[in-house]
Image (cartoon, rainbow, N blue to C red; front, top):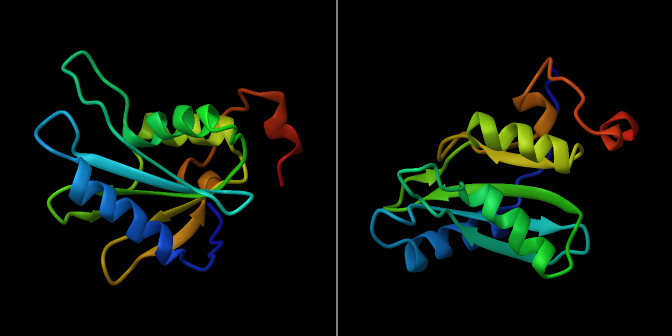
Length: 137
């Protein structure tokens, strides 16, 4: 695992926290995600919890971004409802995010330890699923 570090996008954290505070209600929506597109736009989404295994906020965000014509993301963060703060992506989301956006940066860490790391650092020793990963640096 490498130890790359990037500046933290606090505006992105605030956007996800605002969505978590205002849109996450009840057990169906407990996590919010925000991502910055390569062109600077911010996209937000919430999870869709269901006992059959509904999608996490990060996965909903991928679809929401595509629905807005955004296919390149720079940085993503997930924030929990009830003021839980930044929450790292689960294993499934790590794999999907790496497959879709191999040069994506992810904001992780607790309140005083928030940092930005490359998605590949969160999923070391992964297999190559898509040809586009071979060209990512």
